[in-house]
Image (tube, rainbow, N blue to C red):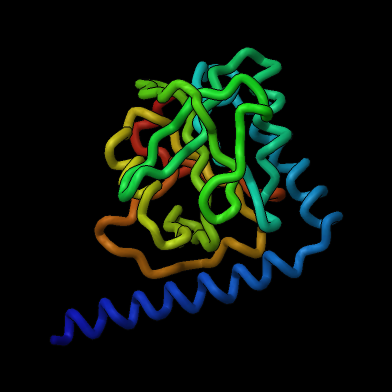
Length: 200
């Protein structure tokens, strides 16, 4: 009984943090989003991880998330294989796109690939969304568990998350099935959580 109470309290805390930090993100001005996104984009595009990768698996930002659209455009210009997620029931798959015109508005108003080839890359970078993170790499996502499952199935991919500085807390509660990204980029910090650095 104690264990189930503890779990329900943890879920409640997650839900509260999710709601609170979504509201904070909505309150950002367009200028704040633009400036922070540009700083993160510069860090990411200048990284060895990005330069060395052939595949970039990346979501399309919305609702004041750190902008990923400019990264998608740059990666296509750089001849990377770019793939965007689409949800199928409990699972998520990535489909290759050749331009922004390959995206259509799907469920929940999210841009997703339409009629594109499904990819199963064995190397590359996976960009992971999140609402709250901590300095140890734990994250609170949107509650569907899609990225936790995908990261667990594809440990060969380097998982990278983008966040505003205010989204990173000293510590958040985590559960056994929660997966951590390998790296977290904010406008002012680069946090690395890689075990057995993949680029040694």
